[in-house]
Image 1 (cartoon, rainbow, N blue to C red):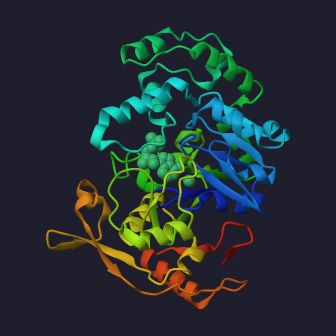
Image 2 (image 1 turned 180 degrees about the vertical axis):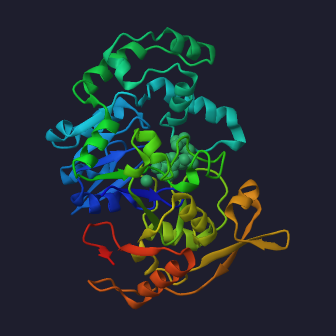
Image 3 (image 1 turned 60 degrees about the horizontal axis):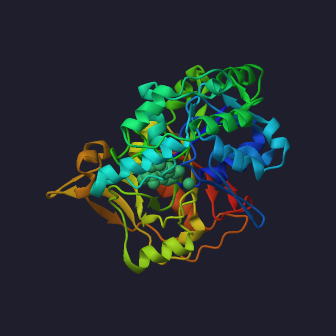
Length: 403
Ligand code: IMP
Ligand code: MG
């Protein structure tokens, strides 16, 4: 049975670890959205692996699929493959329809951020938004174009007109061609073939639901779709093959980049959680903004994704912090709401209504689930109407409890 792993917050929920943990039960792991803006961390013993493009199943010897909906930066892919055993290359299949990211889109990303000025998004500068935009303009090559004759002049002309120096594009294309040769194929067809043959594919989302281009906190979002319903469309598979979504949530909230964040904390408490939780961007190294668990936002994410099962991560972090608060409603102009969608247009103005239903302070994680964590499981299940199926209390595979 296929399964997808999606993020229920603003990314960095711990999807990488969950995917690595579950990958053993699947034949292949497929990326369906985003690009090297993602930073998926997998810890094996004392070694930390950060994947930006390669699916997090890489360390489990699985087939690695990069779908048509991914923005593929061949330079990043090359670097990432060089850190993996050489045989990993043989397990990679890159869809010919995937959108390419060239160095020009990275320059364009920086230019757009400059134009936005005080409203800059704080993008990862990986050129992902511009690459998808160039796709919509129908100016950019897709992966299979690298293997044929492609007329780069309209794209070059575009960049000249917006003031981005287009030199080096042909060399980049030649290098990229060398890299992808032998890896290009039809990922959608591969997923269908696997599924019909009784195999199972794990779909790995990048970023989180609240960063979805349509459904997130626009304009402070990423440029692709992060929700489970995007999986079949982006991979080119029938919806019934998309599998059940497993939602991943952290027991608090983080956000990198700009934009409204109702439960955001500041001062020493934020600093403590950031330090204990090592909340620094895996792609950019930026300190992540931290805040309390936000049930209003989570309910919206659960509904959007149709999630029935969730994994809760980072319980170990809150076992070292005395306080634990949960946002149960938003307040604005004297009235309260639990409707995230209605709050989207003024998310920066809402005040969180906080509750302190339990504490995780001092929880000791062994083989059994500590009583405080059990309380959190019951609370989350009741509030979100989901089943908690996995708890993660540390970076390593062993720090996982399956319920
Ligand atoms: P972009 O995706 O680089 O265009 O950045 C747009 C917004 O999404 C910024 O706030 C980024 O910090 C955020 N973002 C992009 N990728 C990730 C991710 O993988 N984790 C968390 N935030 C991300
Ligand atoms: Mg990340």
